[in-house]
Amino acid sequence: GFVPADRIATLGVSEILQIGARAAAMKRAGRPTIILGAGEPDFDTPEHVKAGAAQAMAEGRTKYTALDGTPELKAAIAEKFRRENGVDYPVGAITVAAGAKQILFNALMASLNPGDEVILPTPCWTSYFDIVRIAGGVPVAVPCDGAQGFRLSPGDLAAAITPRSRWVILNSPSNPTGAAYAEADYRPLLDVLLAHPRLWLLVDDMYEHITYDGFRFVTPAALEPRLKDRILTVNGVSKAYAMTGWRIGYAGGPEALIRAMAVVQSQSTSCPSSISQAAALAALTGPQELLAERAESFRRRRDLVVAGLNAIAGIECRVPEGAFYTFASCAGLIGAVTPSGRVIDCDRAFCAWLLEEADVAMVPGAAFGLSPYFRISYATSEAELHEALARITRACATLT
Ligand code: PLP
Image (cartoon, rainbow, N blue to C red):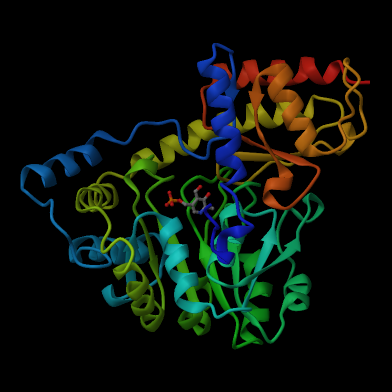
């Protein structure tokens, strides 16, 4: 029989995807399941972006492109970093891949030796753990609970550093918590990095454009020029422009790292899809007003979900600064008993019970490394959110 390689033997398909598949199967079987699990905007890709792709096809731009991005797209990304982030990356400091996920994969494959450690403030996006493992590294989880706004403290960062530490990964706004780092939150962390010259910083800015209440987004490479030669700034078009299926992500960083990442990519995908690169070019160079409009639409939904959750006894939800997730505590319900006599003994049990009893799919905090919490993705219609909250409220009222 088949025996998997050691590097993946202990890994499974992401729990988020598994819950999504189970909920989708329930829906197909005719149940009224509401899926609050998916990490993608419900908007359609903008028309001018589709037009950019259609034009590329019509003009025959359907061949292999330059290994890690067309010169036009790299120039547009360099311009985006200047315009929106105040960071000057020359074109040679930019790389493009099939999604920010492949960017992370390239970066970690290109930089980690067996046993090298990557510091991960948790809860965090599940893929960080497993990409580090596939690349031969060791994920080092540093718990950051709701009381500290789910943000890494400088003391905890300093305490996690060992001679094997290669990277710390920061994600602002965060999947799964929606918490974001303001300039004042970043400063003391950057000071710790300045004191540890072997440690590099990977920042995942995927949700940059989805922030609320006047939050001022900043990225570390702009804040601390002395660290710029050991920061990889990761971003992409998936979340900002509702382009998850087009698979384009990008990064700016030190040129030696960018070249090493190109070596990895040259033996996996050869280049990102030519059509998708044309679409991403249209997104980055086209009208940007839609970003703020869509963020405003997400804000209304955030407010609706946070208020609905906080009205339920036993659930507490912090107001997130960005992204389209809430990460609420269900600590007050742990130990409760369902009408059929089942004990809700952890967040996985809570989510499994709500999926069965209320037909609402959510992801347990355990999947992101922090319990007892659950993540809701509110990138769905307000009508569905109202209905889901009503069902969760009704179900929780039956617990004793
Ligand atoms: N980073 C974070 C924090 C994410 O949540 C995601 C997607 O869920 C990604 C990166 C990857 O995005 P993509 O590979 O679609 O560019």
